[in-house]
Image 1 (tube, rainbow, N blue to C red):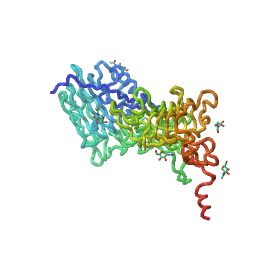
Image 2 (image 1 turned 45 degrees about the vertical axis):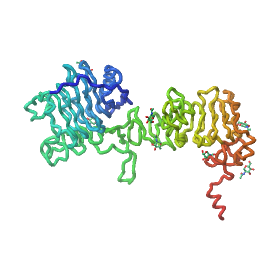
Image 3 (image 1 turned 60 degrees about the horizontal axis):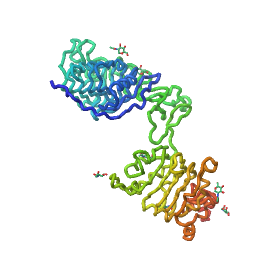
Length: 547
Ligand SMILES: *[C@@H]1O[C@H](CO)[C@@H](O)[C@H](O)[C@H]1NC(C)=O
Ligand SMILES: *[C@@H]1O[C@H](CO)[C@@H](O)[C@H](O)[C@H]1NC(C)=O
Ligand SMILES: *[C@@H]1O[C@H](CO)[C@@H](O)[C@H](O)[C@H]1NC(C)=O
Ligand SMILES: *[C@@H]1O[C@H](CO)[C@@H](O)[C@H](O)[C@H]1NC(C)=O
Ligand SMILES: *[C@@H]1O[C@H](CO)[C@@H](O)[C@H](O)[C@H]1NC(C)=O
Ligand SMILES: *[C@@H]1O[C@H](CO)[C@@H](O)[C@H](O)[C@H]1NC(C)=O
Ligand SMILES: *[C@@H]1O[C@H](CO)[C@@H](O)[C@H](O)[C@H]1NC(C)=O
């Protein structure tokens, strides 16, 4: 017999995965479970209280059941209600002698510990305390994954369990060693048990079945097979007699799918609304999703899929398909650890539609920072900003790649809110030698703050812009906004002389650069952001041209 390692390295990681502590519906008591593995955040006391809150009254654990680092004085009676675990079960580094998990029937193993094990019981032996019996007397089915039970110095009877009867996957690993003495089953058990008593006999539901049964059974005769929708076993042949359901539990009956929203009326040959329609929530059919869960089609989900966003319709959270990119709010720069956009943080701006805070582009971000070992930013990656529509703080450009002649990566930017300002400014563009135009073609509003555009030697077009029109705070006289900070760029006369002027289709409001797609507004008509002479679709014009 090997002893227990004296010290068990405990990495204190903060992997707190309690999205929803309670998600109980009236119809079924379920709880989310955890995914901390062996890490423990906070004290054992706090962790115990979290577990107690989560598992009290919980029948189905939607994630993993993890019990680690618990002292022997703890009262675990709240585990008594648990019947099913969707992910894995991990019992590690504890000091108690017994866990009240007698009601646990099924471990589905949709996630596995160490990618392999649905049930893991390791190193539960500290000093004189330790797990003595596993007592999973009702566990009859592990749908995926293996079993690992090692280094539980006091654990007895564990080698008397018939794992082949429990596990679906006959090729999955069963690793059982370094545990306590073998023990002896009660005579009535037929050789397989979880403990010494009559009540500890293992319930066999697979290896004892008649060959006609295509799964599990409740007796040895061919007429005693379980329904095909059952998991773990059953008390009779009906789909209402199952211990647990293979797919969905519809008020006690195991069904391949929840009652759908429409039913076919064979008299009218039409699909009709099904008043009994239900949502699928894990393995349960419910008539309403729990309140903190979103509804998507006929499913209850904890988060919407990537192409949908959460909306509140009559107090019900639903997933709705986004028009274009789903809104995504991202944190700006100039906070504690992000002085500037640079090669280390640029990826965090992918798909962002709104920047909470400000965006700063400084030299050490654009060209890299030898001192901090940060490489230069690839200009291509600035295209990530093409999805940004709003900035709540300011846009401040002190540096820009030499390859880029404008700020057209911000061509979707409509609003700079200026909720925090830098010396009264909310748009700053300075000392960028490559800049010939701003290219901010969608910018419609600068809600607060003035504009500072200075010492950009080649910059034109900015003279033409009617900034007053953009200064929405200034217009209502609630804010002071001005253009006194626009200076020392390319002289307007030189721009005009070289033909850097607005397209004739632009109105007097000005433009952000050359071409009819850079106008603030159009003299005649606008089609998809580009000014045109005629309010007719292109096809019509070209058609007419050919006749
Ligand atoms: C454990 O807690 C349960 C309910 O919270 C209680 O009924 C039971 O008496 C407690 N057991 C011990 C040994 O304290
Ligand atoms: C199905 O859910 C009901 C609660 O709605 C529960 O009482 C019953 O035990 C469940 N049956 C199975 C087979 O999981
Ligand atoms: C960005 O959005 C696209 C389209 O919705 C999606 O395919 C992609 O995975 C997203 N990327 C990231 C990093 O969010
Ligand atoms: C700098 O970073 C690169 C990878 O980004 C790494 O390979 C290199 O070892 C780092 N150098 C120093 C001095 O940290
Ligand atoms: C903006 O600059 C890029 C090159 O940096 C160029 O391809 C593009 O045409 C410019 N757009 C405008 C409107 O000037
Ligand atoms: C600029 O816009 C403001 C507000 O829309 C308007 O009152 C003003 O006449 C415009 N100035 C020019 C020169 O067009
Ligand atoms: C476009 O606007 C200009 C000036 O407002 C006007 O002279 C011209 O006739 C308009 N053209 C069309 C096709 O409406």
